[in-house]
Image (cartoon, rainbow, N blue to C red; front, side):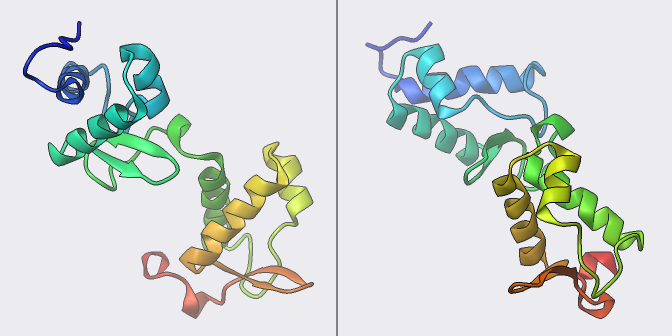
Amino acid sequence: MLDREGPVPVYKQVAEMIRARIETGDLGLGEAVPSETELEVEYGIARTTARRVARELREQGLAYTVQGEGTFVGEPGTPRPEDQIPVYQRIAADIRRQIQAGELRPNRRVPSEKELMEKHGVAKATVRQAMAFLRDQGWVFTVSYRGTYVTPTEDWPEVAK
């Protein structure tokens, strides 16, 4: 129960409640902290107060935030449970695994958007997001009007070598 009239700010009270959930194991490492919207509904707080909760958890070293994805228990880089990894990242991981295993060869096209949409049951935007993610990491490159290709082995990110 929140004490809205007491000396402890509401965001600190909510952060303490989330901390208790982390300490009891109700929220495990890598799991998502309730979103701003969920905090608003669950505790009857304003959006700015919900943002302060996330900031407080970060400052206490209990959580980290990934822009556009949410706030998660642990330090930055803490692995997330498989079901909490964004779909585009799971698709990218599958393609990266195929590249590293030699199933997709350097300077050869990766499967088309249509093939990936059908294989993973996702929208074109999700496939494009996965390809952009792989491009940013250096696993693939795109040639206008030709398609997306596997990067030559010597140019793969360091983690793969």
